[in-house]
View 1: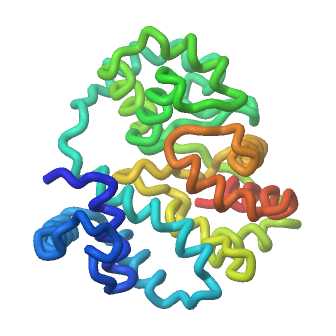
View 2: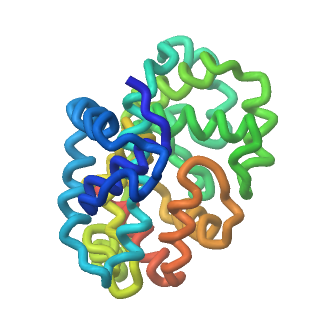
Length: 269
């Protein structure tokens, strides 16, 4: 079954608000779409329903947080139902991954904190980032370096490389204890007053991400890299997959909060 983003958006709104689907989009037929929702819900992760249940309880005070999380719910509906991905071969990916070692390390764990650890990262996330670098859809400080590297990669190459790095043991790090408690509160509870949802809503309680939706793992990530990406999202200089959602969230964080939550994620296991 394939769902368009428009239909997925309507399903999410229906399940959040119990509003008639035709009131959200007059061109949709409610009965067939409700049937699509029932069929789709059997195939998506329990994370989707956990988010729905949590968001149903939020009052109007939390409206910005609700709005920021809707794209996550839409992605969880759309991506798993959009057909089979390109079959990936981790062994073939390893053969193509030599050039990656210069920045990301031979084991996918970068020695330089400005470059991300990618070992153990979700394959779907890695693949989409590679595709976005190649197409020009992802911009930002790293796009200029990545563009020539991915220019000659085929779709199969990118899927294989993603599968290879995803199969490697993830990095572990250590948090700065002086700010980790503040970071933990943001990561696990968000900041309702400022409309900031809990980071774990999309990145998971253990920071392992949501592989099916392409939301990245953040545990053990270099805090310097995480801060730089949060700033880039907030300023709108990083575009690409899920950038609009992250811009909404990151722009509500001050620098101290960015530092704190990044430190917490670095030590998260």
